Image (cartoon, rainbow over all chains, first blue to last red; front, side, top):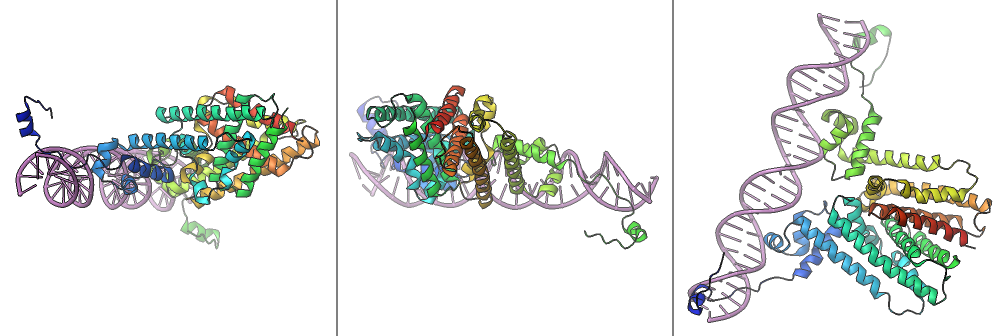
Length: 212
Length: 212
DNA sequence: TATTTTCTGGACTGAATAGTCCAAAATTAG
DNA sequence: CTAATTTTGGACTATTCAGTCCAGAAAATA
């Protein structure tokens, strides 16, 4: 509906009183959708599930987020943001970069079975959509480069701190660590014991330290 | 229907004329279903997709395999069998067990983009079902122990061949290698370049060789 | 209170889907 | 050819699900 304003009197006549607060808490609703998609997957999450998890009405959901696909992508983007933030939060200026790395790898040993069973929403999306969904693929790529950059920085810091050999290639080590991290995620999701997960984390750091 | 054979005459009376060849090629149909499930996932594969991929009629499918769930589980079991076989085929009595290990890790650099995009059907099933499906979980566990056993043997052989330090723990190294293998699968599925995948494989073997 | 707007919830639609049913064609043995 | 049995394919059912529509409740300002 186009609104043509001629003068204030007419405007007043047409729009005399403004109404109900424009929106509920959009971010909270998105966070709710994220939880549902994360635990149930894209196909597994019905619209009813989503509405219940978001605590909003059907109409509000479609008005605010478009459709299921769009809601999923926005949830995934939100997840990646949170995930990245989590990484950087544990970064700081720790005196032992290698300890930070070990902390990343060992995170699964500190998570409950339920948390590990959910896995990583990014990986779940990738394995579900393969490379059929360009937006999911692009998101995965972006996250990969961002995380690998961060890991490479940590490896560099570990070298400067004398914790690992200066001859280790930062980028190669970062790719290696990222792959291991994703592998651990899957192993944890498949039900590997905390013990096994811890052994892998330890072994990975030991291997890194041993390299010349 | 139980067949009680008293003598040839009675048998003849009750089953005077046997009919059309009892079954089409069950294994071929299953292989077709496997392909469809692998590329499209469980939810993504409609019954029509499956029938087309299996080249059999609707009725035959339900008669022979039960329902979609059962067909999927049987396909997954079949996949795991093939996958395991693939591993053992590359084992042999290779003079360099470490080269065999490298071959496993580098397999993704020899695969086409399409192959890598499909990923591993076992991982796809795990990330799709989480741990909600006990049979999928059990299958994943079985495969894990079987593959880790095999990797541990290879590590032991590498030690005997003097390729890596005798102080490396077989089981820990095997868990580590398995996690890396799964990580590489996911990285490949997410679209990592052959170059990056190769770097990770090389780095992993180098790290293993460096350990004391 | 009156008006405007947004939210809410339920009813509805159209499409897709898993699974069933049935009848006709095909195939083998007597 | 006849009998027996399996395959085949299409019609059918019941359910689920994404998305739309509508009308009434809620909220805020004047």
